[in-house]
Length: 137
Image 1 (tube, one colour):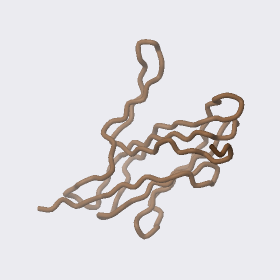
Image 2 (spheres, one colour):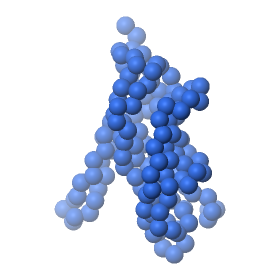
Image 3 (spheres, one colour):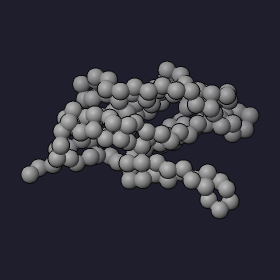
Image 4 (cartoon, one colour):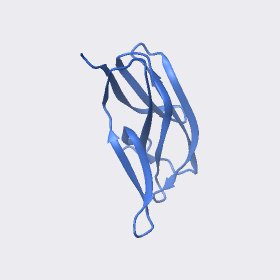
């Protein structure tokens, strides 16, 4: 594995995300209803989405700047978030980050494919596509 290239383990869009503790007191992540498409009667559609991702094979450092962009099929940016995220040190050579969060009241103007693009420190890591479909009557 290339030590200089971050590895996107997963990028999941879902209805909701919950973090709880098991009987041993360890934090556990629950992903509620993963999504690859949404079928709707109403457009434009306003929804709240959970977003969970994990990136490994990172250079060991204390934090990374995370950017999430949402773009439509025409490449128009609909939303953008940026925040700093602490890294988990996995030994002396690599670190990783895992994030569970979401976007409130995201508006999708019509049917189509919407890309959720993940970058770290300005470098593109990967994307997930969400399809919005209008229900046929």
